[in-house]
Image (cartoon, rainbow, N blue to C red):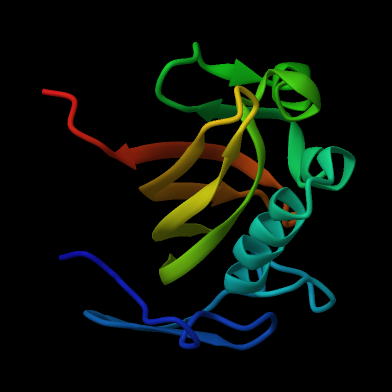
Length: 151
């Protein structure tokens, strides 16, 4: 059974997580009392990336994090920073989040990205992201998928 949690029902630091199909459990072993909730961490990612702040976005990832994205080899560590500082094909834009699901230290999100690419063209595409956070609240793993005809 999948343990999905609606936006707003995720585990709060120091408090019990509420999940479907599983009894309440204490997540304090995963998150210190001062750390933001997983939903807030996901939203922080989109806020920094939409602001075009490559430095603020890069520091959200653990030093040994991995990022899988269509069209790129798996990025690890410094390669993620390099991606946000130049290799990313997006010039500007915004993610409109439709849903965030949280299960412990994992989250998935889906929505629509609309913006301008570095080649000047406009883009609007559905996406789904999957995150794994470490105990410090940093992104340890991220995988992105786009809603486009491919096969």
